[in-house]
Length: 138
Image (cartoon, rainbow, N blue to C red):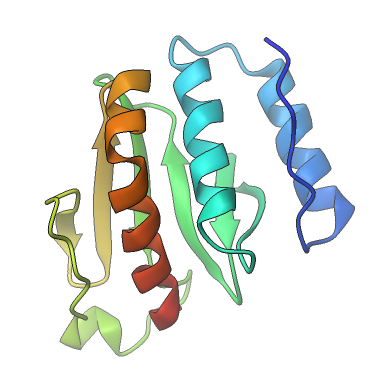
């Protein structure tokens, strides 16, 4: 399934690496992964991408979101505040989530799950807003 890739402020290898990874990916939720990738990249111009932890991941100054490609129910993104432990791991942070998209796994890590393309479309605006709040703490 061809898709148009956004040119972002990052090294070409980040976007190229993700495009190559996705082109070779055989996954039952590939259309959803591609759609959610688009939502992530469109949420804020400072968001870049790369392959981290053997999955498409997103970063600003540090990586903060990674696809969980092993999820059985829908498409999942794990949101975190960088690869290294920081104060947020102890204190937590308040992220506005009026649509209840976040399932907190720890004080510094949360999971967002989308069932299908319709679910992504319905929650797109709320999710993009949540991401803009999240990256303020990265």
